[in-house]
Image 1 (cartoon, rainbow, N blue to C red):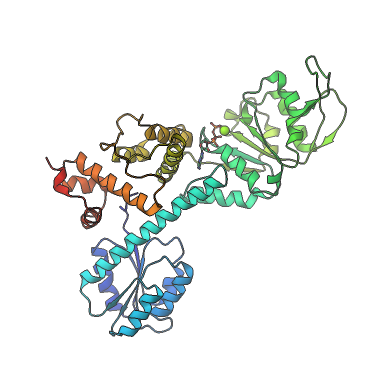
Image 2: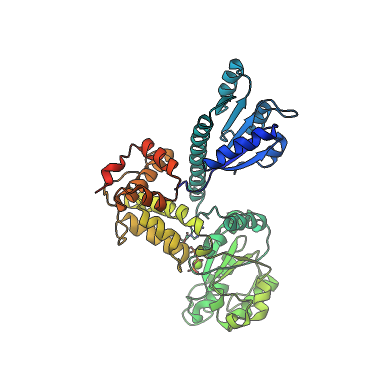
Length: 450
Ligand SMILES: Nc1ncnc2c1ncn2[C@@H]1O[C@H](COP(=O)(O)OP(=O)(O)OP(=O)(O)O)[C@@H](O)[C@H]1O
Ligand SMILES: [Mg+2]
């Protein structure tokens, strides 16, 4: 929850000298400025993911500043727009502010006046974006097993899942342990018209070979010793829904042959019968290894691999999408806090660092356990210096985020004995931002010096 990245500013002015000068002012203040001389080009660069502020001149040919504001309002009412005008038209300014323009600045203006306004607007936008990310995470959580992640890799994965969920195509999901293969399989089910049917998960690695056949195909009463009652097999049970074959790489060879038949014929024959029962299946298989690689495939049949490999989804390991670690951490911490009836403790900088630096060989599962241990105060060396809970799940989200931020700043100051240079370095934010934050949170730096 840091704001260490330069906030983007989209700047529009048809006067190229002014555009250059204003851009320079804002860049010096630490913003990432994109300048445009016509509003339509700026609009093309904007969408709901834009994480910054728009600063525009009002008098311009074609689309003027007020019309631009109107378009942005319809695109995303939470993008702050600051309008600049050479004419002190009070009536226009009042109306614009009423309509939701963030600020109205009259030329000529002091550089500081603009910078202050942009800074406040950028902070507001940042909170809106964090809010949205967390809300999305929570909404996903309410749908069932959520697939949390905002990195491009995860966005792409989600898009692919939406595209193929409602087709009947069989899917092979690959990924390291704990990376979310089962989550993906269950989403493919829930996002399809098969959601009304059963999601039947079968772990091919843990089922003893002796029972795997009757588990899969079912049996008649008396089909073999011990088969007192007739049993519907798991494959049939999944008919109309989804069959999830987990750890498919450990499926015994004899079962592989039978499975291949099921996939091709879409029918099963329960043990002890000669019946052919049709099944309406979508099969999702999961593997930890790359079955396409003969060295990793081992005893896995190549023909079964090709049969399953209509669509392959590979989930990247967490270390290749580190930017999701913090979001996942907060999600799991809050979930654990709710489950254990505990507040979420203040998150010290050491934890943030760990989230970024650790390699997470156990991927999301490992991270979830880490968050749980943290909430329970069992995580060595990461305890907050201040045991007083500072944020809890009953608070509105913006307040919670504010508290987290204040905690992180206090903790970093404490660790650095109130040394501003080291604290700023550790937090990775500009000096000015740092002082603004101290003021906003009412933190007194000298309280931390020795
Ligand atoms: N993107 C994600 N968002 C939220 N939770 C996730 C995500 N990915 C995984 N999880 C959670 O992490 C845990 C492990 O995920 P899952 O069981 O799907 O992993 P897996 O790839 O099947 O692992 P294994 O190969 O060890 O069976 C689960 O509790 C799951 O809900
Ligand atoms: Mg699994």
